[in-house]
Image (cartoon, rainbow, N blue to C red; front, side, top):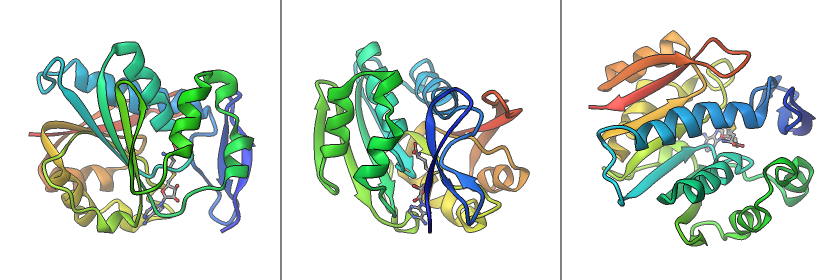
Length: 224
Ligand SMILES: C[S@@+](CC[C@H](N)C(=O)[O-])C[C@H]1O[C@@H](n2cnc3c(N)ncnc32)[C@H](O)[C@@H]1O
């Protein structure tokens, strides 16, 4: 499918898919949305919760590595919090180097060496991006995810249910639930009722949380 780079309202860029009229991030602000949904309401929430054991590793799974923006922000946050983090990003259709350069995330976020290390990291290999952040990028379909009891935090960042309804079902959420440790936290930008009910039916405790600018709600699900 054709992909175009567009500028969102906070000045940061994202990828637009004209055929679907769908974006990789919110048009109200790509960096703003990623920080709000995944970093603050996902990673930081988990680190402040009873499930977090201080000085331990936090394992993050990202469903939809895409531009790598969430991984980049997580590596920066891990450095700020002095948090040991290992990160697995699953992606079926990696973007090109040209697209990556055009997105120019280091323009606002700096940390060029972290950004370069993330994108120079070979697929299917664990790479040490910084002292406290390791990354494994896995190129595969989400339906092939079969880890068990491994992750504390899941960033569920698939395209929306309007264009990929099969990714917001009990089948997918059941497999994600299995990958998580007890008290693990899943966050997503989507607040759709059907997705919320599918999460509840596989065992998650789900709450609606205030969304990023331009969106009333997002979802946070905890594995109890
Ligand atoms: C909303 S975008 C992810 C944005 C990403 N988190 C970021 O920060 O750039 C959704 C991603 O899921 C990938 N994707 C869609 N369907 C998939 C599937 N069935 N299996 C694996 N990847 C898929 C797309 O290629 C796209 O990169």
